[in-house]
Image (cartoon, rainbow, N blue to C red; front, side, top):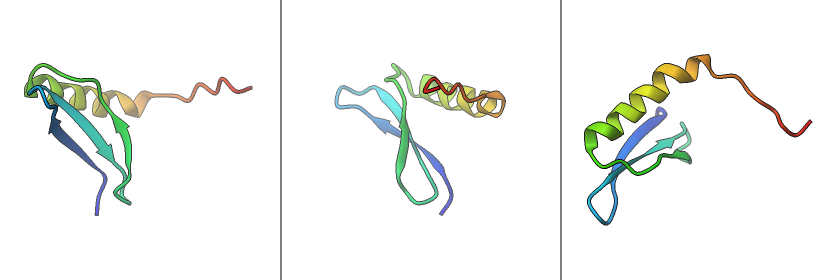
Length: 60
């Protein structure tokens, strides 16, 4: 199994995504989007920008 984004519906007909790790565990959930395209755009944005993300460890 590979890591996957799932697009899901809310009870009021809006959309959100869940990101599942390789082991099937949900590790991230998005905000709620008004449209499916907005949800897909959110996934695309995350995928294209996550490569440049750094870790900001605020426990130090």
